[in-house]
Image (cartoon, rainbow, N blue to C red):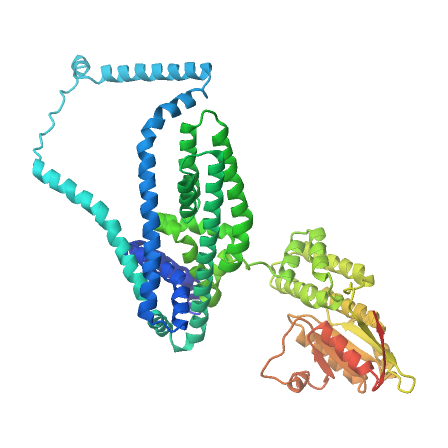
Length: 614
């Protein structure tokens, strides 16, 4: 029990750390929101500052120039947009009557009668409630008299002072937040190296390389995202404003600029950018055609941007899937409100980078990243576990396009067989699915007997042509499967590849290797013996068969195929062979490609001609 508790705690440690982080983000949001806005602006402005510094401009002057230009641009655009919006707001009361008249034309006479009936029922209900709960009705029902409410005396001067203070706080708080953001941004641009050094010191000397890569990746991804977001939003605003101008909507330039700005706020901003010009169009137009055209323009631009442009630009550069962007936008909006909604993508980029570089947080990258996909062998194995043979064969066929057959066997089929063996020995796989898997693999291997690799049109195939003076060594290859069906399937793959290489082959199972067969093989000293074994628990079986074969065939070359394993870096090939005891094999290979290469070396003559075929 004492050994199990640390293991369970280590599994829960990332979740506990994540929970504590979320609590800190929530309760410290008043400080973290301005800091995060400042970090985002610093990521956006840092390339411009760095470019000025490369031209020998002092950092203080470079930061001052970039900061003044950026904040002047933001303030100027905000001021102009705010004034234009106030002018539109003054015109809205004039549009009120027109909007009511146009909306009334939508309702039919039947709907108007229904609305009048509802209003009549509401009036009757109000009269009934009033008559039931008046003091006179309470006296007739002999209930307790109405309680006298205490009179509160309010100082008019104090209430006016309090209202003035609240009004001032409403204006001063945003101004103070903007000031904090500006101060933080200038400090981050001035002290970039100092901040990076502090983060590296917190990470520790042993993680300098890891944290340096994480910081560099986060800065690159966020900077690229902000740049492309600004480009996309500007293009969107220009197209939207131009379309509104052609439709005939007043203040089309304002609505285009506002659409580009509001797209910074995901989902909510786009809906707001549509609502305002749509209301104005309904008020000023004499028909319903302009509002319909505005809606069609909005749908065309939004669908093109969200389904084609943004996935192509954002997903590859931020490393976040589209579903994760939506989910994290909701998460940050619940945590920080509208500032969290604006900052959701840069914050999620940081989370994905942490999940990529911190092993304990790798589940974050799996949940949110774009490249968190099943490998081909895992996808193939999953489809066969679902007993979907057609799709599993389609996965193998798609992987095989333009590749040699041995690559499919080494990279997909044998690793999938290893997963089957692991689950079978652990008791996680029933006999029905296990047999279905073996039958499907066997059928696929049989179908690929006549497979021919498609080479590019201009490729050159080099085929060895032995010379007359020096002949290639002729020998047969005998493949022995170590134990179960998985070993037989790997041996079947090996035999198929040997036959495609024009070698004489023979497939035997471990039970069929009798003393008579071994004695007959001993007469052919050139015969190569392959022992096919697939982990887990493959070494002991391969060792026992190898010792038995070596006892009868002391002069033959024996190759052990421990498929889908990796060599121990601390052991040399000679040390690996020594592990087999008295029945030492000649070579130990881990892949079918190594097996083919080894046989080709033994079969290759010392000299020869090569025929070139196109």
